[in-house]
Length: 235
Length: 306
Image 1 (cartoon, rainbow over the protein chains, first blue to last red):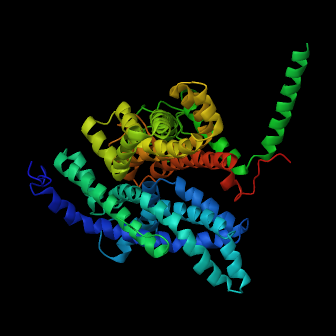
Image 2: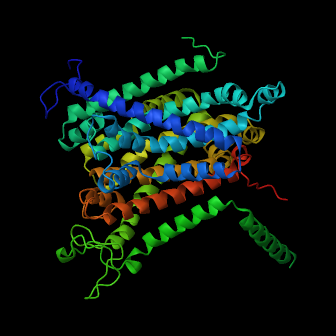
Image 3: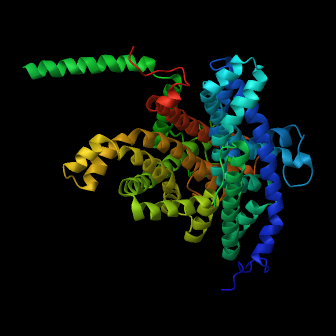
């Protein structure tokens, strides 16, 4: 018992050093995936919710359902097969340029794009029925302002809560995505550690992941205050 | 006599209403149900419909491309793997493993989770505190990492995989059931049952549980989809179902090494996973539309009798 997290059996250096050395790559991947998720899911959800029953709505819903049903690592393999092996457009694996980041982040994002699009769509459909949206329309606001200022901002709270609960899934998904694309993050480190029976390292990675989950959820709680001024954090 | 007539009448009526319902079911539910039936049947009937033994290796046919008829009577409808085994047969048998692991872990995790949720919600107090705090701690650990770490420590056998999945899956049920029970507990008929002197166990099982069954079924179907993907992911990484037993995940793991030369090893097992998971997800979606009036409003389907 020394209070640190021990030394890696395989690498012979403190496990925390190893974890923090690999963490930036995972954060880079997760952040890129988050950008991809929001950039695709939000517009899709808004279009879908504004025209329920339309062809756009149908396409979004079917694509989202399919996206939720594809195992991420298989999507990664298919992307490699198409874009790296056949078309030779993107590198198959490794980290470095933006081109290296493209396929892994799309692979990791796929499930969350689907999830976020479906969730935002259903919340938006409910919010659009609310009185304050009707009021906003009645006072002559443009559609754009009604949707962005009044509907979407009120739909964000449940959506952010959902994303917070998915942090663990994102970390887990990162493990598998990193394995497919040989991305040098803590996911690859975890798999290496497990195959090497490097238990101190496995423990350190699992513990740090749990800490990350808790910290991010705390930050999201703080974010609620910005999203909804009625909410105040009191210790 | 009268009772017979009454019985016959209710039967006719129920058959008529079933007929009506069938046509009114949302298409997603039907497609999902169809897919699930297809996957379950093909797994259950694997010994009879598989063209070959899934373990029967023949190096002569190593990485043979898909072909319906070879000169010597053998065939590989969707190709052969690196050891000359028939991919189609392996997918059919692999479905048995994937479904077995998924269904058992959902059943065990569901039973434990629902039980704890009932106790937590109905009894409250210290029980509630302990169960929910343990659940919070459980949720803070990334599911995949935890499952990987525990399986790596215990050894990758199928019972171990099921145990770990059940162990990490119970929290979702507990949270759901607890939330529902907290509102149900205050209702008059529960209070009446309690006033009549029934023990908490009887009240929980006979009067509270039946009212939570439908959301549990919906959650269980989504959990099943998740478990199938998770099992395949662990097997893909090499810490799930071990070779030579075929599972969709470890087939993809083996196929990854031959991606450049044998595309069928990567494409077909993944399609099997996707079809199975899509079916279960569609089924869950359809079920939720049926039982949850809030989500029903957003779909075109309505259950109210016209």
